[in-house]
Image (cartoon, rainbow, N blue to C red; front, side, top):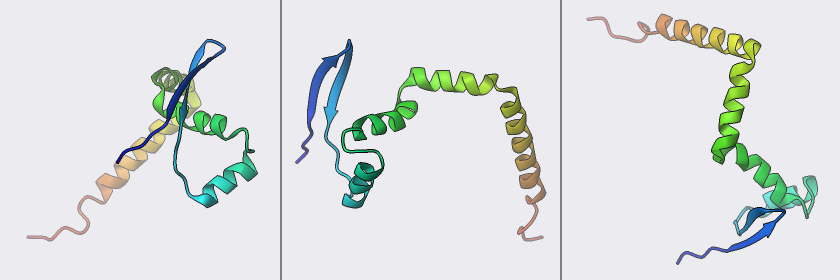
Length: 96
């Protein structure tokens, strides 16, 4: 049996949906304690949004690409990783 809750309402021109999820009691108590009982929904939405809303992903990637220091660091890291893998390529192989 599959059960779900989905209610739709419009606030300030934005469509909102109610979602029922199941989480561990300890996680729920932590959310109430750290985030606050009336702020959990907004907190979880802010966590999920960058991972699931394409416009936010595109904007995030564009911002990262525009950060030249970050891009330089990323390129240095990638090149160092490639060299590490290339250097370890012959280790552990049986000679024959």
